[in-house]
Image 1 (cartoon, one colour):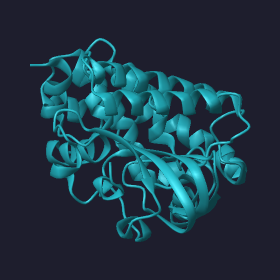
Image 2 (cartoon, helix red, strand yellow):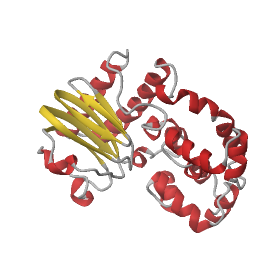
Image 3 (cartoon, rainbow, N blue to C red):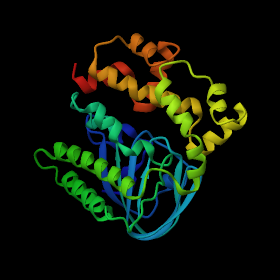
Image 4 (cartoon, one colour):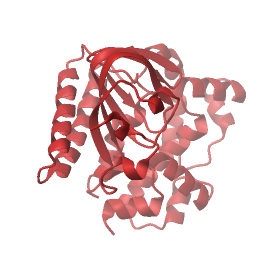
Length: 293
């Protein structure tokens, strides 16, 4: 597979099967599109098989070398540069394509640690972590299945992604938690905010009440929160609401409008817009793809 097969600007041609939005391949060097700041709607996991270079992901720069693994969240701005003798294994996929079992779909959605990449932990994983070798092995197993395309390969790849998600979660636990080292103090200070949002996301939450929980002005709170979390306070609130909404879409037959109101969205159209931003699908399509009806 050629490196330009991984051009994220060509979605229809990018995935071989529109019902199986997954691809994994080795790339040599950095193609022109990847040297320019860009984003896409898919989760990306990269493993450096050989060579060196640099990544800019969000507001952080990373040097990389053989053995490094990166997780890049959907819609994270990023680009690579300054590569030397580079061979990189690149995996991209739509998280929703593994949500095929309505019984476990909410657990799967909540488990996927990819949502937290760049917000609650570094995009670059630690090579000396005990789970590193297993992650590399799972990625290679997925690539082998994808290239051979033997009977049942899609099902095996889906199961391997779920296993990868669990191993990533264990990786985070073994690293002592989710928080980025340079943000621990700020995130600890915001703990009352996180707890308040968790308890009250179904209600209308004002920035002023969140700011008052940490004794900050609204303007300063908004600035510091976004710098620490990578998203604005409102985006964080809506993410919590979208997670709750996904559970209701899966587990109940409530109308879309009722779910929007129940989860705290001011109107149905705003709910649909924000839900799609989080999951990549409008609520009705999400429910249909997961429940199969």
